[in-house]
Image (cartoon, rainbow, N blue to C red; front, side, top):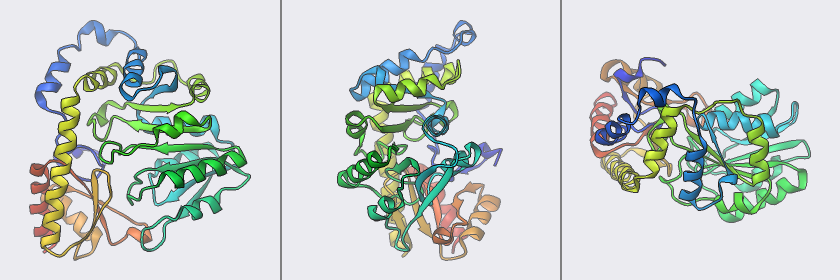
Length: 335
């Protein structure tokens, strides 16, 4: 959907309000004509990000958002006609890229209770598997994996010669990380993004993290200039401001606590999905509620066609103020 700027946006897991205005204005002052006239130089951000998470810069590659990172990884390590194992439902770009690249998408379906036993994923891995994807937490169903789960998948991947992608798009909302697995294994890659917590989805900045030889092959597949200079500058400045990062984490937590409290008080079924979103079962048809919210309240939420999710809405969480706006609209439409 285009023209979303006119709406209250709770449909795409963006920060509904964005970064603090004074911070944005301070970064914009550095966007000189000379800076914009230069081709992008990502190495400074790569080095700063590597220092930020405590690894070497040779283990990091910067992409045009994590969507681009996903496509580059599947192009580099996938094989036409061979399998990419993911859970389902999940982030749709994985199966979209498989379709575009001629890869065989092999989705592992959730149980009816929204659980995902790791044994189901292990059973799906075969000698034809080239890539295995674990999102932690997953979107839209926010299940989590234990260290033992991940280790078992990695062990199985090595048996068949596959690469494991650990997608941590929602890191910081859920602060446990599997970074060490990417650093300790030569076939494991971690994905991060600046679109969610860091709140610059419009700038398109993602990070690929892994063994330096894997990163070498990913770099070899790149275009000359992928990440734009505006995104690089904003990402650098965000890393310089841990106070802003901590403030964003607290805002989202307070907003989620407020929303969950309102849902509880009205007897709604909901699921805290460990990212910046909540699944809600409205009291009326989910698609009708979503449509009325958009048409009558200029408020966007995400309904689903998938059978297991057809009665639910995914709602992005933001600050308490942002969630008050959503709550007033939602409870009026669903009353």
